Length: 232
Image 1 (cartoon, one colour):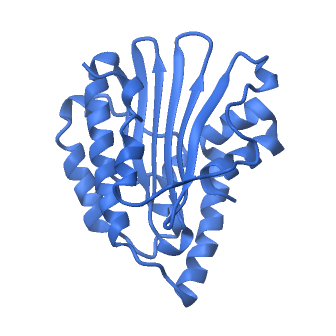
Image 2 (cartoon, one colour):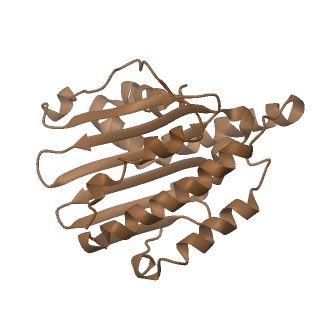
């Protein structure tokens, strides 16, 4: 039986089937142990860029007892006006908090991608046992969630289903990436402005940003997160 620890192992291989990836030199390289946490927490990961991605991130946060976080995040370059793909898997003993989605507001939303999100809904519909555990997102960050978000708190017995829906969502997303073409002119300027608004929502409400602020203080925490996940 597969474990949630195996969630990220095939992700980079799947992405590389679509496009080559180049490792990114971060402003604050991994691994790191935040001094505020007395060195008890270790943050590690791999960060890449490509022709169409500002960032492709696979990050792991190791807590001292019974808890580990796996963050998978794909941020396309703004000019492609694509959704942002993300997955958060939190392992807590025999429980998991699991979220997978493609944020529609990630680059302005000039293109609606209705067929893509309908496909994600069709995929999600094939996991009724998983969706019995669906949770409502916190107010604020929920404004950028898509209609196809899968956000659940599940027992470890459903690890394999979580990995499976993650892989199916990621495969559908990479197929969308293959056919994407960049915007130009007024349309590009419009989504650049929308992206700035999206970042404000993320900074104000995203749990990952809040975690970075807790670990490193507000200024450095936000700077680290925006560099890691968006390359800004």
